[in-house]
Every structure is written in structure tokens, then in C-alpha cells.
Image 1 (cartoon, rainbow, N blue to C red):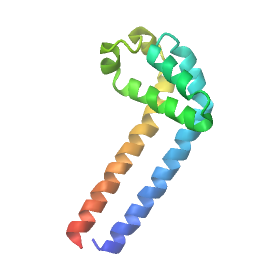
Image 2 (tube, rainbow, N blue to C red):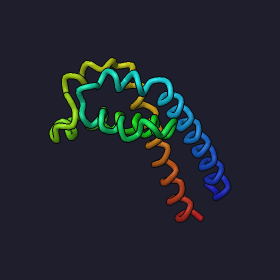
Image 3 (cartoon, rainbow, N blue to C red):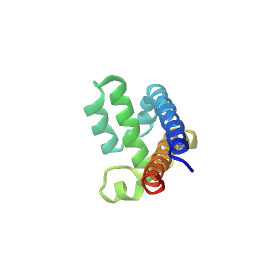
Image 4 (cartoon, rainbow, N blue to C red):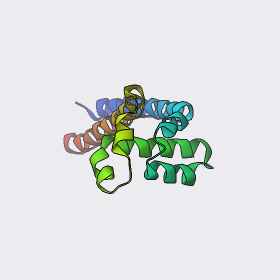
Length: 124
């Protein structure tokens, strides 16, 4: 594989990351407040809502990312008493997928980009 091919693949991955970020912004704008209203007993979610509520779209994206991390690692947050586990388990599966799939996709694309970058150094 030549350096030009690796650069082309890297470009496609960057475009894909950009598209995923646009999707994350749309999901945050449309669904974060509805998801937060279903997690009203989670002190961590409520505290972050107060902190980021005046930051506009960036605040919604941050709040959505924080909820995604809570959904990905619920035991860690529950151990510290930051979330209500029963309330989190009652969250509809649709909302879980809306937050977790784009976050995981962005992480996977970032790993691919790093692998291509490292591979380019050793191939070229």
C-alpha cells in the first residue's frame, strides 16, 4: 500500500468522522433534553445539566457525551453514587442506541485513523 493510498483512506475516515459529529450534534439538539427528563434522579446528570444548560448546542453535545459515558460505564458511576441504576435501566433502548452508537463509531474511526497514521510511518 502506497502513501497516497493511505492518505486517501485517511481522508475518507476524516469525512466519516465529520459526518458522525454532525449526527451527534443533531441527536444532541433533538433528544438530550428528553433523555435528561427521564433521568431526573441522577445527580450527575442534573449537575451537568445545570453547568452546561447555558452553552447552547455545545452544551447539549457535552451533556449528550456525558450521558453516553454513563450508559457505557454504569457500574463505575453507580459505585460512586452519581446515578440511579433503576432509573437508568428504565431508559428506553432507543435512547441508548441514539447516544451510544455514534459515540462508539467515532471512537472506532479514530482508532482506524491512528492505525493508518502509524502504518504510514512504517510503510513509507
